[in-house]
Length: 537
Image (cartoon, rainbow, N blue to C red):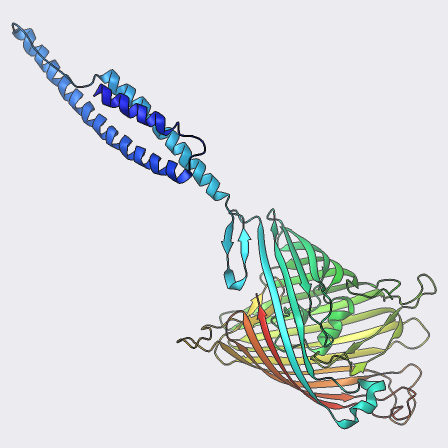
């Protein structure tokens, strides 16, 4: 027995004296074998202890017997291990078990430091085990095709009202970027766009690049270049808009002091129901060098989910913008001219001439104000949204200050029963997620959505009448009314196809010196058919 114990001790010592460069898997295999050996030895020791206790009792009993009648001779041979030897073996086994537990603890701690990979909703993401550091890749691709059905007289209106619109295709958005968290309390986003909003793809430019402090949730502070929160329609992500483009009245308000790549600093509150944001903004990353001075503005937005249950959601909001100083387009200083222009294309941007059917032209401005009110209601798989916006330009000259307005109403019916989601982080609704993704191999048909919208943007101010000259303080920007119907198909949560039809009716008086359009009706009616193919993650 003693020799066997010495041999076991020697084997254990050799196992822990393996070279440092041994393979971890081999070490674990050896340790497992050793564990089993130690357990067997432990069982043997327990049996030996039991035998020793039994023997001790027998010895005590024998002593009592001998005390009464001592035998002539007692011959006893015992080959069992002594108690001191057993105790020594137990000390060695305990030491080996302690080293094994220490090794297992080290392995577990090292595994806790390994990054955690995921692929949720098609977006690759890696994060630290404690979730304080994250990094995810994001992308949005939108390929649009459009056809403009205009009257033959449109070309003669080129000088006053856009002229012939160009049918064709373009990548509206081709965005790639990444987002994540740092040390738990900080978040960041970088998004680059290679698409085009004027019918032509452009060189890559910053769509969003910011860092945000989240340590006071739901209060946060953001700084960088990004679309600062402007209104509910603006809060709807580009991949979640109901139609190919945002409605014209909301888009004019959005781009006055917001929009993609806008230099800004924002304080925002994003609770489960209440969303509020206040931003100080400047120019855009993509502004041309002709601006001798960037504009300075403040814009704010507040919205609240005033009611919500299993069937209903009711969201209301207000927004406003004040441009302290419009951009300067020539000299800097007292002689600088600050101008502002309100204009918009039809609610699709395939036309590669970037024609605007309504436009105020450049107005010499001291400051600009905008205000708006919006609301959205969801009942089961029905959704409705509406808004009204007012705009006012304080002129820098002696002429009266022009004011304009616009409004919209839009709604959807999801035929397959899904509902549009809600994003507290943006204070706006999102696209529906198909309950059963499309698949020819026994799957479903995805989600199908019918949609309709009416928008009215009036950029006329004291325009006068046809056949007469425009008053000195008048603005003949035109009034644009658009009826849109569409159908959206979501085969799965990443892919979308959208078909829209627009009927555009523009009422506008010409104000140029060109005889054929001066003081005459230069508005036009246009039918537009468009299709978008989209992938977003």
